[in-house]
Length: 364
Image (cartoon, rainbow, N blue to C red; front, side, top):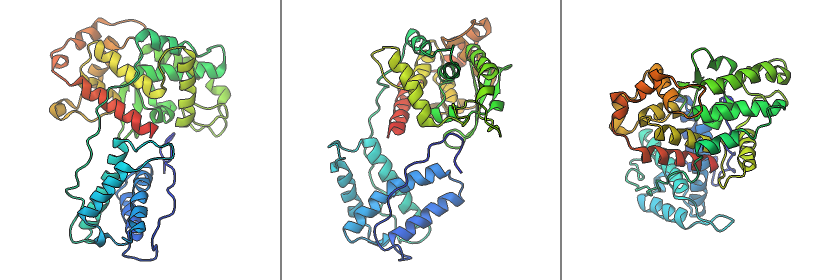
């Protein structure tokens, strides 16, 4: 079952080949996907892998390859070249990130086939994946620009006030759009200034700080707007649509994108623009990359894995000291930001590149 607010990937077209052959690629793919479900992979992940593997099975069927044992490493290398030269309807090639994702799905599929003894050896074990670009975010807002976008929401209108609370949440926390859509009423702890992100990417929960200003706008939305949007039975979702339903990621993207456009900036983007902006401005404010990684729900860099578990109190102090949207700046936060832990070296470019890759994945 999908998490609240999570978009379901498109269903792939029917598989080519003989679906009735129990030893065929199509039957093996069904077994692979069922194994993923049994191992408690999310339905979103399972459908994504299916979507990435169907083109490979179609390509094999066109060449008379119907069973896993007929796939060799040269065959996989031919498929890799096919992905490189293939062109979409608009004439553009597949991005290297997309090529890599499809090949990684193939590699996972054949690793499973070998472990289940459906094939004698894994022809994809030494498949060399394409190197992807480490691009920095194309657009990042400055603090004044972020404020300009946020002010576009008409707080005199019910939905405008809701949107102001959403924009403040995105800016303060850097949450993914799916995570914002999935917020429940009980996830916000206004007194402590924290919010629980449940079942984020990788099915992981995390507790992160949220600024006092964002909390103030959320509380105003809860008092003045949400009661008029609720349709019984109440879903418990924090942010509701005009129809009383939890917001969907695509709807949220459209709303935020319109505010960015209305601000009249020479920059474009939506929810991920605020995610980039939050991370960049906190880095510029002096926050150590590991604190921001915890905010964003990223895995720690290999060189800093020992610092993965950061106290929420320390993280809250860092957030207060380095995020530009605040009601007042506390001396304790500034002291925490200048602590020896925060002075450890970190690779800012890797963090920002990971954000850019996330954005590309969402757009894909």
